[in-house]
Structure formats: structure tokens, C-alpha cells
Image (cartoon, rainbow, N blue to C red; front, side, top):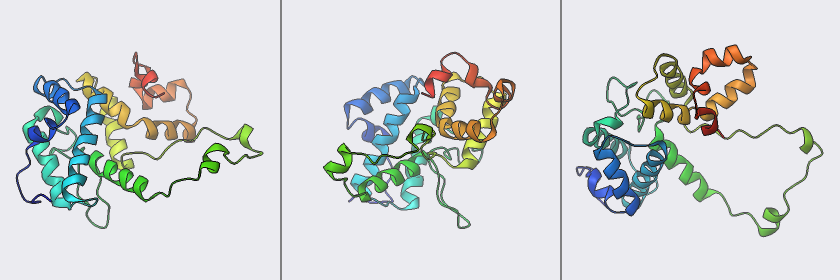
Length: 208
């Protein structure tokens, strides 16, 4: 297991896989699309779990996030004026849990590891319900905190550039947006006011 206090070499981590090398090329050109960001998160979390176990320390995750935005400033969180890496990892404080896309990915991976495998019969024969015809579409759990989602939403209300940031924040807030639309029942004007970029070409398709 690696020394948790050792400097983090982001380039070395990424060059360890073919996908990582492709992402590295995009990062060097400051052009990273949302799908590459997702892959980047998977690679970084895999690195954490392989080298520091399923529950790396807060300092380890913080060091990784800090090294990432230091090495590639285009990944800096514009909403985080203090550390600049809040999007990637924010330590827990005042009894509030840690947040950030790396933390959420770690949490989800651990949940899947703990979840017992379903029996073949259960998989093949899902339970039927008399209310199946009226059941509403299932909306998954949000991968970012509500506070973070609101920050992204407010940023999107007042910014249209850079486009990659708009696309990323729209993707990050997709679940929050779906829940808000269901709970509030806004008309088109209300939706446009709350989520103006939803009507931008290509953004609606991103939600489905």
C-alpha cells in the first residue's frame, strides 16, 4: 500500500491505462468532454481503492484532488474560491459528510460491493405490482449534494461559457433537475427561468 503522504503524480496515474492516456492528451489541450470526466473519476477512484483501500483518508482524497487541479488548472472548480477543488472533493466538517465527485464515486462503489448478489430467480422474475401501470418513473439518487446542485444551478442561470463547464454542470445536476421538475410542476416559462440551458440544443438529449 502506498504512502498516503507521498506527492500525487496525476500523470503517472493516467498513463497507467489506455483511456487515461487519451484523457491526458485532452487535458494537455484543455479540452475535456463530460464522458472523459466520468472516465477520469473512475480511474482516480480505482487508484485510490487499489492503493489505499476502500476507505482512504480524507487527507489522501484531498491531496489527490489538489494535485489534479494544480496539474490541470482547466479542471479547477470555479465555484470554489478557497481550494479550487471542491467539485472533486470537499472534506466533511461540522458533522456534515464529505462531498465531491470522487467521494460520491467511492461511496457508490462501496455500496455495490456490500450489496448481496441477487438470486437468479429474483433477476428473472421481478416482483409484480397491481400499481405497475400507474408507477412513476424512478429517479436515482443524486450523485452530488443538494447544496452543490443549487450552486451549479445558480451558476448556469448567469453563465453560458465555457461550454464544457455548462455541459458538465448540466450533467451533474440532471437528477436534481428531474426531481425539481417533478416536485414543482412548473410550466414552460417557469422551467426556462429555473433551467435556461435545458432549452439549449443538445441539452435535453443529455438528460435521457
